Image (cartoon, rainbow, N blue to C red; front, top):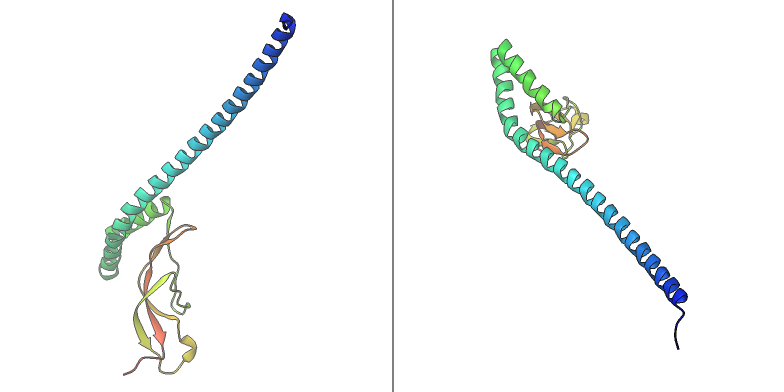
Length: 159
């Protein structure tokens, strides 16, 4: 049996249209995959840059601590300016000092107890900060990169 050429052409046209639709869908998916990949790579690059910056800051924090200790003894205006510039640079990189005061409740997520002070009378101070020894630092809205070193009041010290 012979197929009508017009019918054959119509079938071929339908087949081509179906192929075009399939190819269009594949192209749309490929473009979406490419866009998702591009966004993921951009995000990963941002994270890598932040981590590289954090690595440098973590190395600079002990230097900052030494300058602060020197400033506490020397009261030098040049040191004060240098410390301020360090802290401005940290802030620009999204690093902030952990705010802590004497009498605050000890928080192991933010503080590191390096010494325990014996309570003699006021048990209400138990588990609170007796003295701040070294400032702690954290990523703004993020993890702690250096815990605040503190002395903590306790009533469980044996003499």
